[in-house]
Every structure is written in structure tokens, then in C-alpha cells.
Length: 429
Image (cartoon, rainbow, N blue to C red; front, side, top):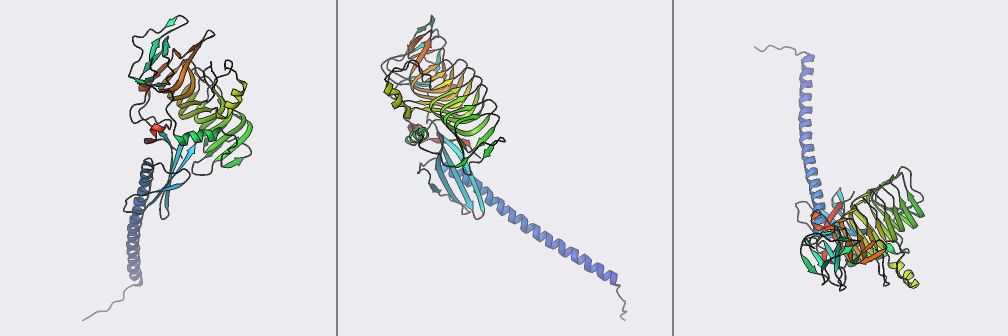
């Protein structure tokens, strides 16, 4: 016999409530599972896009395609990813930008590129003009040296003879009558930077804001131009070019990171810290106690000033050095002087004072006076020592050159011999 009983409405509502909760939990679980799988796939795609950027940069270094043109890179991958690389110049450094994409996922990576020797970096290269390189005082050369046929000899300046037990702490090789060639594209870029008629491309500012500028290399270049530019109490970072018709002055209160300075004369005051490229057509003066980090580049290209100087027909006794590095200063990167003048010169185009250190490379088509230290390589047409009013040609007095003290990871000037071995020197932002 079946007994019928009424079920209370409250109990029925409870059952429905519990069922609804279970349904919501099941739907939440399914949604969570789907979301997890979706983000897992998105993460896999993002990781693959990032890896493809590194792959694209490495693959592009094996191939020198045309400048200013996007070059496609092929890569076998489970996910179809588009990779393109663009080559440009940022000052005297090559700049490469990799763009990778998969549907709506994109990534950009930019780097400065330099050249590296296949074997060890030499310490010294001096053009062969049938005269020896004379060492005096506390001079020391460590590493492989490419020298004139007459090699190294001991000398005496102001009563200070060379006193070490050997002239060279390394191997001696025969040099030629000319310096190692620059890469043709780099030489063209240097000439373009020295030409006042060539105007950099970018967004022109009427003034520099007091709060400074931070500009990514993934956006348009910012340019500020004036007759005289005086940088103080300002921070400039990134994709910025400062151009002066006459002179640029950098004070210790200025903070410059990765910017370009372009002008006839550039004066860097005492105690300046930063990393930048200074490119001039007449002179660069660096004060005492400065610390210019890697990859700094100091370049004077006198190509367009040569004709005016040669018309005077005068030997250069009273001219100032093209680049002057005052005492107790550190420069990590490249210091370069290019001068095509044919007249006789009795002054150093590059002068490095006592207790000043260059970690990197010196490249000078004329004479160098070295009283400080080069941890890296010197390539020069010759040396000069000025002491007590006397000019000592092809003499090094109390200078030190040591290629073994430079980090193996150093990447330097784009020489023609290094075009097949380009490396990333710095990642940009």
C-alpha cells in the first residue's frame, strides 16, 4: 500500500539550489580548464615568438643584406611565425631590428652590432714607413704587434731610457703601409655624418624639456638642433640625436645614455658619466675624471675640413689635437680619428694623458701621443711624444698597451676583415 506524503516546498527549493550550485561548479571547472588550455597555448605562442626574435637576430648576422630594407628570415617551426630584420646605422654602430609575429602576437628586438676578430685581438698595428717604433720610459706592450720592418727599439727621452727586459711581451708580425680597412658601409656612414648637408631624419624639437627625454628605439627618432647646445641638469636616454652648427658642451650634471652628439666641436667637461656617441668634424675634448661606459664612441672625421687646412699650406705645429683625453678618465669603447690631410704634422691627432684608460680600440690615421693605458688595440699611422718642447717622432713614452686585459666578449669597430664575424654589442629598448 502506497502512502502519499507531501514534500515540503522548502526541501524542493534546497534540492534545486544544490543542483544549481553543482551546475555552476561544473561550468566553472570547464571554463577554468578551457582558460588554462587557452593561456597555455598563448604562452607557447609567445615563447615561440620570443625565441624566433633571438633566432632571427642570430641568423641575420650571417647575411649582410641591403640597408633600410626589411629582410625575411625563414625558420622551421610548429607555429607559423613571420620573421623580418632591418639593418640601419645608429651613429658608427650598425643597428638591427627584428620583428616577429603570429596573428595578434608581435615582438620587436633591437641591438647594436659590431665586428669581432676571428682570432685574438692584436695589441698594436703601426703603418710601415721604414722607421722603427721607439720605446722610452715605463712603456709596455703586451700582445701581438704588427710593426714596421725595423720593429721596436729602445730610446731615451729627457734622460729616461727604456728599462724593461724585453721590448714586446707577445708576437711580432709585419705591418703594411696602410691601416686595416674599415667596412665600406661604415666608411660611407662616417662621411655622411661629417657632411653638414646631410640632415638626420626624425621628429624635430624646438627645445629640450627640463624633465629630459626617454625615447625608445622602436619609435621615431627625436632630434634637437641649435647653433650652440649646452647640456646640463638634464637626462637624455635612447633614440635621440643632438646636432649643433658650432659646438656641443656636456656638463657633469647631464646624464646621456645611448644618444648621438653631432657637431664640429664637442666639449665634455670634467666628471661626466654616461654612454653615448660623440661625432665631430674638428675636435673632441674630454675632461678629467670622466667615466664613459661601453659602448661609447668618440669620432673625429676631418674629411670636409681637409681642403681648408691644406689651402693654408702650413705645417701643423700650433694646431690642437683632434681628440684630447685628459687625465684620470675611463673610456670603454672606440676612439677614432680620420684625417686625410697630406701636409706634415708635428702634433698628435689623438692625445691620451697620464692615468687615462681606454678599454677597447683606438683607430687613428695620423699620430697618437700615448701617456695612458689602452686595454685593447691601437691602430695608427705613427706615434709622437712631446716633451720639453721637443718632438719625438714614432716614440711611445710611458704608455701601456695590453690586448690581454680586454674582455673576450668585447665587440668593436666594423673593419672590413670583421664583416664575416659580426656580434651583438648591446641590446636596445
